[in-house]
Image (cartoon, rainbow, N blue to C red; front, side):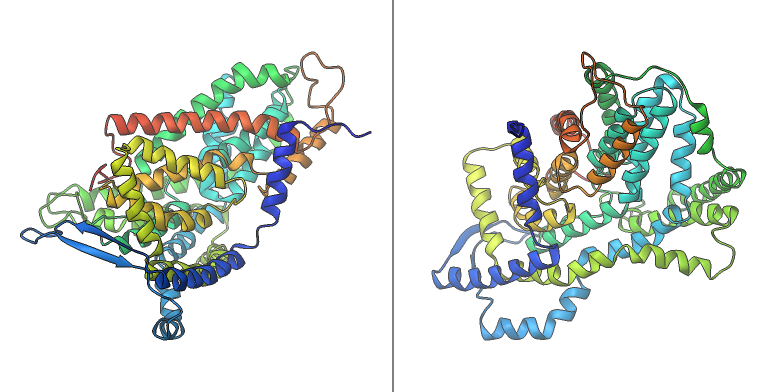
Length: 529
């Protein structure tokens, strides 16, 4: 007779089976296009509309009542619009230009091996007493390498903990928790910031709100999160998890670390990359410090708007090139001029899945905005929230909660935000709250619950790594137990669920503190618009 499953295992099975039945995002958004068109016809037929008072947008202008009606997308006029304008809809999809430029430039720090070597250098040199903190901190920042950062952190976590005579189970899970659970936090701006920011910008444009959106609108908060997450995860690991799963015999195997020691060429590459960073720093200081500097606006300031923030994507690309090209030349990844477009091509290949999905996503977003369905929902929702006197903190917590509920079934962060943003962003702007806070709340809910989704691509890899460690006798018995447990999804989720709660509590607490004390979450971002 089979062993009876616990409630948690049954719940995980439901999520896994339900999530596996979801179609590919391309197909999913294709269905949503059809649903939106049919819904627009029905809602237009029943006369769904909303009337609200629109305040003056310029000095001297009078406010007025505005009526918004659902537009029938199945009308002859709109069907002709789809047929004739579809190429323009796709090409003008805001997230595309940002993500393509960012991925092309980030290839110089990812595909040349610079970022992985940089992380490895400081991780391997971390004092034994700080190794847990160092692993989590590096793993959180490894998200700049996207999925590769997760696999790097998982493998390095197991290697380092095993080499130090500690439980590699803890090291592997910590790498996963930091890189995937802390995915949204980073000291570096990445392609994710550009992609999510582009989706937010598209949603803002439909409202007509005068709000500047760029990839850095959450940067101050996210950069600070790297330290707080590393600290709370470290404390939870050493005070709770170690007692749960055991921590090894302390016998060091330093030969394992020697295998991953940096080569002389890699050390030379990092030195050259540092020179490149100094070059970047000198150029940026020259273009920002003088009172009439290139990156200042007409009145010599940076805020509320200036070339410095408007050009943040280009500046990030300049940074990646400044450190990546010298590193690549030093280690032999860039030997001739033809290697530069080759590396750019490697980065651009990563955009192919996004480009494919965006073909139908761009149409969905355009038609959704044209139909006014979500705009009406946002206006009515804002009225309800105003009547209920819901504060900004409660508003942000609602977004976090909704995202955490969706996340286990849909692992793609951009796909989730594409669904949520068209409704949430207008709601925030209708309440005069900066949509940067809607994006922040979404990213918190999305990131912290990544590690509890059975659909995560890294789960089979983690299981395989842990099985190998257990077969090699490197995973110790748990306290009070006489035989090893079978490694499976339950092993992972028994640890990642508590870690997910720790991550969520940490970032939500930070968000509440930021809101209470009106701390800036990004350059030039204020709470109200």
